[in-house]
Amino acid sequence: MIRRSLVPALAAALCSCNGKQAATTAPPPAPVVVAQAEVKTVPVSLRAIGNVEAMASVAVRSRVAGAILKVHIADGADVTRGQTLFTIDPETYKIALAGAEAQLGRDQALLEKAKSDVARYEKLVQKEYVTREQYEGAVAQSGSLAQTIEADRAAVDAARLNVSYCSITAPITGKAGTVTLRTGNLVKVNDDPPLVTILQMKPVYVTFSIPEKRLQEVRAASNQHQLDVRAWNKGESSEGHPGRLAFIDNTVDTTTGTIKLRGEFPNDDRGLWPGQFVEVALTVAQQPNVVVVPASAIQVGQQGSYVYVVKQDGTAEMRPVSVGRTENGSVIVASGLSGGDTVIVDGQLRVVNGAKVAPKTSP
Image (spheres, rainbow, N blue to C red):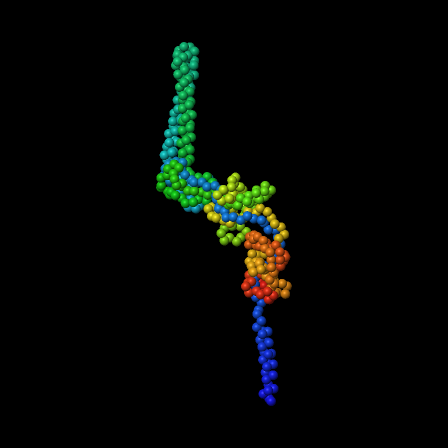
């Protein structure tokens, strides 16, 4: 009798213990990262891959032949317009200049004598002390020497110019490439390869192409206002480098069905480097008052796209949404969300519809 009465009591005790254990082992809230759905104006952009081009490129060559006395720049140096880059031995050209100046002085002296002869012969021919032929010969000699003086002056200018060419200066402000010849080397006139190539770094061009079907849209927008262009280096997640549309080509490439465009970028930080490929976005319009969420908030299931919304009670609600295009890492939500809704952007795999979550704001 005693043993039979203990059975119900033991069963009740076991049930009580199991209930407490079930209550204490309930799963904790899932840790998630959240962000707010925002209502804002989103640009309508055309995306493409572009190539950075220097606005000006100068291959520096010597205009005189000779030995390089000094190289004033290092490989890759920043140079300013008018800065001395190379010095060519000027002695040969200084000697030529001195000879040209001496010849000019000699001929000027002869011209002065010839002018005196003309003045004297003019009086003598009137008195018939000299013949008319002698007088005309003196006049011709004076005129010939006057023309010789002009040729001498031109020779002096050319010689002086050659001396100035011995100092090679930067024609533009920019960045130098590799210096191909060093001190002591002989250089020829217009020698190849050039002594150095200088690229203008600020501003720069970015050339890209768009489908011809978007040409009229771009032209119509550019006729109304200046179009903005942004460029991003590979893997760059910032707001990019701002620029403006500067050029639309005058013909469509029939082989690709695209047309070439060019953006001009101030490039004050030199974030764009000539020759590199960048991502480009050309803004043609603005779409106001749209709801946007980070692209990582959008999930895709058998029924379509959805997001997890964190409600006021801390539980997650799976909500179907209709999504539009993606712009700068954000997705436009056409329906299903309102501005201010809190959505989960990371940790969705740990979330169950209706379950508690521990939200953490996205940095």
